[in-house]
Image (tube, rainbow, N blue to C red; front, top):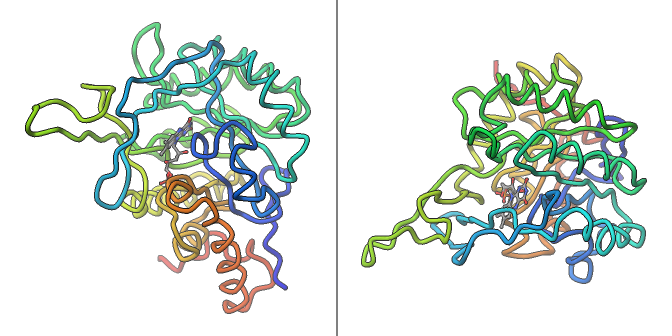
Length: 310
Ligand SMILES: Cc1cc2nc3c(=O)[nH]c(=O)nc-3n(C[C@H](O)[C@H](O)[C@H](O)COP(=O)(O)O)c2cc1C
């Protein structure tokens, strides 16, 4: 059998498939339908220091080739997460990655320090698609601001690896990737949802509850955007720096996952696919194994970044 295991900054995953942040609950909510030991890793819902109610309905709507969401980072907050949800990580056989969100540098640092103090989360993933409540600017859309945030978070982390989840809603994603790596990121995750909006033409109002703020587009519609961004970030930043990528965006099949691997992803996330079929990762893992074999390789790692694009 081929070797599907991969290393994310020294953390070994049994296979490259990762259940994406915000699409598989806090820790073990999907475990009954999708046994965690079929996954390489799962990412928690993004956790904030204080509980967040999130946006009013509608929070999720289907659009052609995808989904728009405006969940608004609804979550129970750090204290309850640590007390009520994180202990479940001990009972499941996969790597659990802790996702962090916040509205200030201090927010991120407090959640990061608390997660670092646990021994259940070998990696944290910073969701930087949040506006700073101090000035309203989004951390992940400004390289200087991103670098400053990551420098502070890096300083509070001990052995935990720091991954940064990049937003596609920027002019030059490689500049953001460079800023993240310069500030000490151990890995990058890309892409988060693409900014979008849907309008009810009879009522003449936005269809999502976040109103004028719209929502985030995910699913097959964004897959080619993800492939391109992973490809570009791998070549310009990740490969030279030796930093692993978790690539995601619209992965529904093993072919979609294989594309991201060839573009440069060491691991591949699945989010929207879990809403269609929570067991979809199982078929993707087995399809990848057969593909690696057909390619004449003994390990999937031999295929990372190996697209022949001159
Ligand atoms: C309903 C929903 C909730 C999400 N919540 C989060 C979240 O809490 N934190 C985060 O970093 N990304 C979140 N995402 C983004 C996904 O993790 C992923 O980056 C994005 O959906 C693209 O992958 P996909 O096309 O496979 O869904 C969410 C996506 C969806 C659809």
